[in-house]
Image 1 (cartoon, one colour):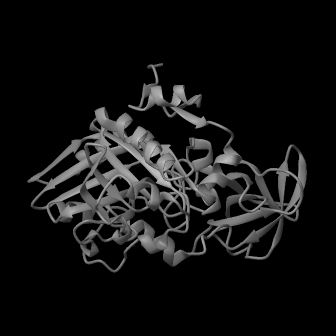
Image 2 (cartoon, rainbow, N blue to C red):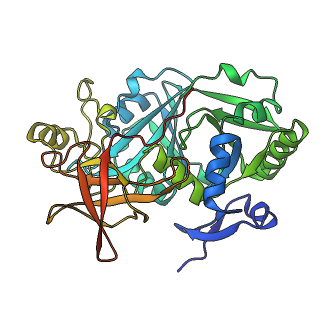
Length: 368
């Protein structure tokens, strides 16, 4: 097995006594002080996450938009400059290659931000379908990516720049912002259910940006703390956001994962997987992603079987105790023709059946 990769902030995590794990071939902190504490701090204050393992692929050329129309289920024709779009990428049978973010600089230049474990696969998949006049480069090694999340994130980041970040709208980005002497790209998307910013900076300057954020926060009595991937996973679960390998994979379509609003059947351009997804939509889904809340003491986990009466009807794709809600919550694939919101089902935990209720997603939604 190859040695796990290290992000540019690896030494910072060691200094902060982060508990390091091998996450998809990367050494990353799963937690610093405890996942539950880090979740609650993110909800109340602000946390900084190292997500530099994510992949970045630059697509350029006069036919870049037409190429993306072909490989994305969403419609990049609706994107304007300096805006971001979420989209699944599908196989011809409708299964999911990946779910990605698309940053549009202009009609001939886009940055695709892909899941870390899929970077090489995505690059090869896209390369095999490139049209003439389009260039594509894997820039993942050039970037470090910091995710600043939480209600105080704007106050923290604003200390580092004169650019008015409060005017940056959700799913918009600024291509050039100077932070701690580094030219960065700053976006406002988020993967936690909270307000926040993504900071794409040159890898060699990542440590300086990281340090300056903590210094600026401390100087202004703002409680910025580092948080690990464990808290990030719980935060996205509370917000019912999908994670590739769990809610999305080769065997699961975007429609089954509840992402139908990101599949544009109305756009003029054809896209890979369109016919299969249209057939699935017409025939009706055999499984659909739903929310579960445990009604008894215990913790819902990935892989647990869900039953209605004596019949096995589905399985849990992600589950955890969710400290913001004080409950154990899960995302589960269940048959919509047999299960509806409000139903009480049984989840098998260590050979015992526990009651769980089907609830509306997301489990958590911030108030403002």
